Length: 449
Image (cartoon, rainbow, N blue to C red; front, side, top):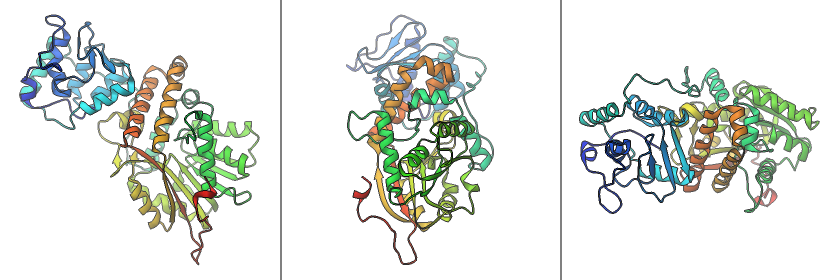
């Protein structure tokens, strides 16, 4: 949301004006609002997109708007002085010194649209910021980052580092995820057949779509590998509905333990095996189909060819792979001093769907279908936010206030990304053709819709 806490000296020295062009009125002489007015102007422009309130009760910005950003401590400024970028803002938010009241989605959109892509901080600008901070009692040594922040070490996408970052995201308590995800315990895009479809029914529809694209309805007791199986929801669906024999793998110990318990609860231990295993350790096994739902984002560009080659080696002629993953035009890598990299998905990478198709073809898959579920993911994310907000006290009790705040912010911001097309999610279906070119695939989508 904020790429750099800086701008040109001309902007810093220019008087801030309201939407009518008149100077913004200070709430009282020497207030925090009047002191920070030039700083906010250089970040977001003279016409603030939302209202800001400060720890002394002063305020800036439109009274009638989508929401209010509440700065409740001068520690916000100290964090930003030492980390004048998105990470400094993120630390203030996670620590509770920054809050958002009102329409969360609208406020995040307004801030994102107003913030410059990148600005430069000159010596005079920095000196002015220091004077403001000193006048507000915000100077001092760096404040320790919140403990929820992760700084991954080691070679990116090595087995050890991948296991560490997966635990950071997923091993925060099954009870917390149950609050957010609901009874389906499915942490990926659902498929809403109608506007009134419930989240649980929509997740069931997505599971069924995956199973039918993989042709599980066409063969008895098909052997399915679910890469990144989560809490076992797809594995259970495939075994219950289609009699599949399923192996599910995950790097999260908590997920594996809970998935095994769920499998036992529904009496499917003879059909489903849940392993704590890296996909790179799969070898000398054979499956009829492979599902990878919401896992590919963790693979990384450096491992992409190996990922598809490994899966290809597990499938014989007619075997199918469904790769379901978030994508973005041109691709993007979560790294550096960003909220998502340090607090949500360390080392995550989003791949352009065209590159996914090309990588699958290079691994000798025949790509048969590509489907976008972008709007469905926006709806899914809003349902998760609604679950979190409706059960806020439970979420905080299970995972802590900071973790609940992180998830609310990240889910809402992601929903905005899927709404405006900056993010998408695609299901790419590939098949291993026979030596004669026979794919065994139906001629049209009618077989699985």
